[in-house]
Structure formats: C-alpha cells, structure tokens
Amino acid sequence: MGRDISGAGVCFVVPTYNEAPNIVPLLRRLTGLYPDPDTAFLVVDDESPDGTGRLVRELAATDGRVHLLEGPRRGLGQAYVRGMAYALETLGADTVVQMDADFSHDPADARRLLTRLADGADVAIGSRYVVGGSLDPRWRIGRRLLSRWGNRFARYIADIRGVRDCTSGFKAIRAEALGAARVEDIRVRGHTFQIMLLHRLIHAGARVVEEPIHFRDRERGRTKLGAGSILEFFYTIWWLRLTSHRVLFRYGLTGLVGALVNLGSFQTLLELGMHKFLASPIAIELSIVSNFLMHNYWTFAGRVMIGRKRVRGLKYNAVSLATLALSYATFVGLSVPFPHTSPALLQACAIVPAVALNYLTNSYWTFRDTAPK
Ligand SMILES: Nc1nc2c(ncn2[C@@H]2O[C@H](COP(=O)(O)OP(=O)(O)O)[C@@H](O)[C@H]2O)c(=O)[nH]1
Ligand SMILES: [Mg+2]
Image (cartoon, rainbow, N blue to C red; front, top):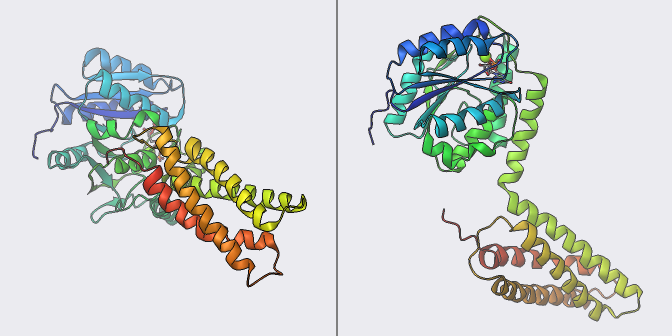
C-alpha cells in the first residue's frame, strides 16, 4: 500500500532534559529538511533547569510548526507517553517519529524511516544492529558489549523476536499502531520505554521493519542514562517475560494453593480419625472449590468470555468431577499395591495426572478466550 507520507501528518516527538546546546540547531535542521506545512515538531521538556524550554518557546513563537509540551520531570518514558498522546490527540498526527535531541540520530535518516512506512510497514526502526548500521567508533569496547548484549538479552528474555535493535530510540510509527499498543498505559520511567513500546507494538500485531543507521555520540551536553534506568531495564524485561505467560503463571500458583488445600485438609481429616478412602475425595473436592474461586476471580479474570457465569460454573463442575474421578482413581489405584506407603504421599501423587486434564479442559473449554484475535 504505497501512500505518500513524506511529511503530511507527521509529528516528530523529541524529549529533552538539559539540551539547551542542541535543541535549537536540531529544530532548525529538522524544519529545513521537512518543509511540509503539515509536519509538526513537538519538544517534550521536563522543565530543564538549563532553559531548553525557553529556547523552544522562542522558536515556537516564530514557527507555528514547532510545539512545546512542558511538565515536571518524570523520566524519559513518561515524557514519551505524554508527547505521543499530545501528538495523536491534539496535533492529530497520523505518523509519529521519535528521536533524541542530541544528534545521535541523524535528522536526515528520518526520511528513510518514513519511506518504509509508505511501503507498508507500521513501525520502522532506525537500527544500529542490522547490516549497514553502525555505532560511533569512539565507543569503547565495554560500552559496545554492554549495548549489544543488553540488546540480545532483552530480545530473548522479553520475547521480542525478529528485531535486531530493540533498544533504539529512533522510530517512525503509524498512529493506528500506537493506538493499538495502548502507549498511554506504559508506566516505565526511563530508557526501558523503548523495549516496552516495541513489545506492545509487536503484540498488537504491528509490522516492524529495521532500517540501518549510524549512531553518533553526542557532541554537547551529557547523557541522562543513569543507574536507575539500567536497574529498571533489568526488572522490566523479566516482568515482560512473566506477564506474557500470565495465565500459565497464575494457573501454576492457583494449582499450588489447591495442592496445599488438598493435602492440608487430607491430613487434618486423617488426624480427626476419618478413613483415608473417605478423606481423599473430600480433600480433593475442597481443593477444587478453592481452585475455582481463584481461577474465576484471578487466573482468567482478564479473559473476554461470552456466556453466563452459571454455564461456566456448570462446565467447571463437569471438569472438576472428571478431575476428582481421575485423582481418586489414582489414589485408590496406588493404595492397593502400596498399602504401607504414607497416604499423604499417595494423595500428592494422585494430583499429578489430574493437573494436566484440568488445565487443558479449563483453558480451552470452561474459560475459553472469545476475544477476537
Ligand atoms: N523529557 C525528558 N527527556 C529526557 C529525559 N532523560 C533523557 N531525555 C532525553 O532523551 C534523549 C536521550 O537521552 P540521552 O541522555 O541522550 O541518553 P543516551 O543517548 O542513551 O545516552 C535526549 O534527547 C534526552 O534529552 C527525561 O527525564 N525527560
Ligand atoms: Mg544520547
């Protein structure tokens, strides 16, 4: 689908914190390179003490395409969340180009990113790690290794397949893709925003391509990448990993609680003098009830399900009956050849085959996700 987006409806979003030496040269270069009257340039400044905001305000007074969005300092991630929302809602952009203010990203390269969108992509990343891309030769080996391996690590752990440079802050993104990715919900503060955004875009079905760029070190001003940002990076990618398998994770935890309820009540009933063949099904039933409550209000709470709760309850009971039968049959079946083994151990063994049956039937039948894919 080749439509022209060489400038119309494009909004450059540039976050700044103490970029006074860079911001005016950058804006002059951008406005010169992209003269289309429908192109906007939005600077998102966090009340920089060096007066970056004032410089942008002065320029905006003479050039209606330049905009300034100011706010208290909440980090790069939150500056982007604010800036992108403003670009889409207030400026009505249909394409956003995000880039740094320090000339690490060459303003001229944005044209190639926009061309990739015109050729049908939803997201075009300015990439240092595809063929033709490069890093500033002044980067020392330690910094190179950190960047490259941090990137690989993030890609693998956070499950961002197929993208070479997933920490790049230079991208052109279609408005529809940003909307589908629900950028406004992103909570991270620092540079981790890039990974979070990419993860959301990919999982919302965006078509992502990479375009090689040369990444140049900043000449003026200082980096704001601090230890807090690096720490946030590590726990965020693990969080992405965990939550992308959220249902399985919660199912496992619910099952663990169920097993404790089962074995705890079994032991208690035995101590109260109940026969093991009666205590076993009662304990199984108690764990089934606790599992249902947790599944319904926690594990599967995020799923879109048609049909009434009562039907779901009936289905769950049917599955549970089958689970109970399988578990009890295993318990009795093991008790006969092993009459002297601890009953609690046999009851624990009887949980195993029931778990598999229970997960498959509940996930694909009782709590089946009916949201459109
Ligand atoms: N608004 C805002 N911009 C920030 C903040 N931290 C960094 N930036 C901007 O984000 C861009 C990239 O940051 P930089 O410090 O160059 O990070 P580096 O390139 O990874 O060393 C630059 O334009 C910064 O001015 C922040 O807390 N708020
Ligand atoms: Mg930089």
